[in-house]
Image (cartoon, rainbow, N blue to C red; front, top):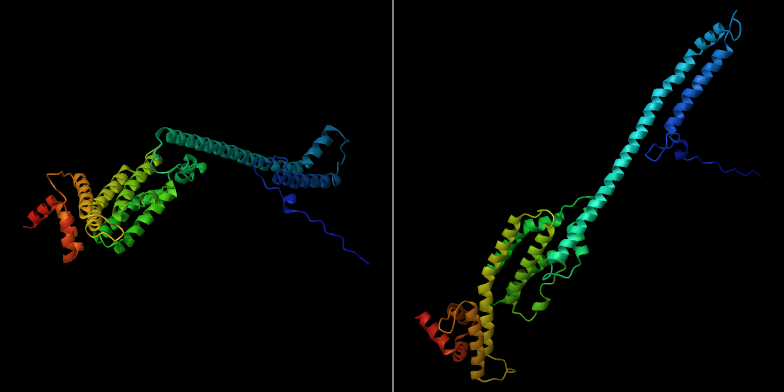
Amino acid sequence: MSTKQPQRKISKEGLWKKMDANTTLLESSAFRWTVRVFGYSALLYAAVVILNYDSGDLEPLSPAHLHSVVANLKNPALIAGISLPILGLIASHLRSLQTKKQIETQQDQNVFSNYLAHRDQFNKFMDEENPLTNVSSISKWEMYGRLFSTSEKGNFKVSSTLVRFFETLPKRLDILRKKIESTTYNEQTNWIEVEDLFDDLEWDFRDYTQAVFSDDLDRELFLSKLEKRIDKHIVCVNSLHECSNFHSAQLEENSLWAIQEKYVQCKSVLRPKSLKERLFHAIKTAAIPKEIFVSTDGERESELKGKLLYENLCMGGDDHKIVITKEISEVIDGNFTEEEKKAVRRVLPPAVNIYLHASKS
């Protein structure tokens, strides 16, 4: 019974070792094969010449005999000599590969050193300036990785997604402002789209800062909450701009100014609506209380007077100058029936009723 002997496999690398920077000249297959081809060819040619050599009448080992032998071996020597420039080219090529490898290694070391220096400067900046104090508790290491994700490769440009976010933010804020303008303040069912726009913006902010925008505002009225969320947006924008430009101006100042201007426009639209929402809430609670809130007209009137005084002061008025008369009037006319308006007038402070009556007449 015959058994097949396993065939010995010779790897391609064993026959042909690719030349690279880690290969020595003697290890190079190109060098070895050049020596073999030209060397064996020259030796074979020389053997044929010697075997067929006829010295004639020349005395062996005489100068004339040796001269004749050398003359006949000229062609084999020429074949062997041809290999020398080829071997020189191979050695030169290998040297260039090694030089290239050294340059690449040095460049890698420089890139890594620059990366460490850049990150160290960012950490010092964060420790000294701490621009995220009122924004987030994200670590400076994580913040650096999010802003400069390609820095380990020597590219210290700020994240391209953050650049696009800054570029597109003014347009998104224009859409938000128009949506706020077209929405009725006291119909909160119409504010779902506005809330969605805020959520989309805040998801993008969270991608960089992990900031929280509404958890601490749960007790605020809807419009007041949006106004305060805008304030936090602006803080986030300023912080991201400051962190990104700590070393060089990569986010333009013009983009920051444009974003801040758009947010101011949103607040200018939102603030009167927010004021009306608060007035509506305060007047309705005082004039038409639910059964669980048992209190006298005097107590409700006193509480409402305090709230109206506070809003009036915030808008620049005082006890002798009521500057929110128009807003109070619009809230009453747009949200209460004729029967409810009688209850409203009973709890409004007399001074407000006088101003309302005067403004209508």
